[in-house]
Length: 296
Image (tube, rainbow, N blue to C red; front, side, top):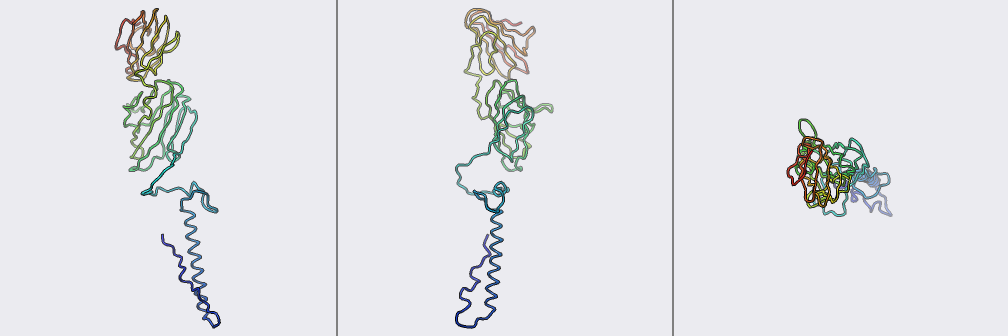
């Protein structure tokens, strides 16, 4: 804005020394001086309430109010050294609220299965972006998302889409840290999801040696056994493929949860080279390849 203060309406040469001076000149100078003080006070007050500052003003608004841009545009700016606010939610059970107005980066640790709720997305036509980092302590825990999260879910490992009124759910293959970014331009009515660290625990090019009595890892493509052992295999992630292989002598019996064949749910690898491929389909493990394994 243009300042209303006018330094030129005060006559600095008045009164003239050594002669009578009209009192009107005094009155004009006093009036103009008073008006300029009023203009100055109003303009300073407006700056104190509206300007963006880097430290607290004496008598000004609190910085959280002072530096609120109120959805005003910042145009043609060259920026550096910006940081996003991070909210560490700690270990939670049940509901997780991600408030867009509070921060754009949230971290949470699973104390149980979690259900995420988003609030205060920006208005439709503006891009809202928030990142959620989830530390999964137990692969039995799931992450349930709002039904509005409906774009790009098929690209997420462990994704079960919303169906019949249910919400989308992410099932994790292994404990670890998983990071997801959510974006919307519709005020939150439709949200796109992307996973930031998809190579965290790849199913391919990975294997684990299972000791007797232990569980085969859900975070590796192959589990193998070198001695006569017993082992277990937990429920997997929809579409996951798991190879069980015997390298060495002796018989290995793997008890498989959610098995898709009749019987007690065991897969026996009786000799060197015996192996089978299991695929998790519609909530059960199905044998999709077999080389010498027996099922009961």
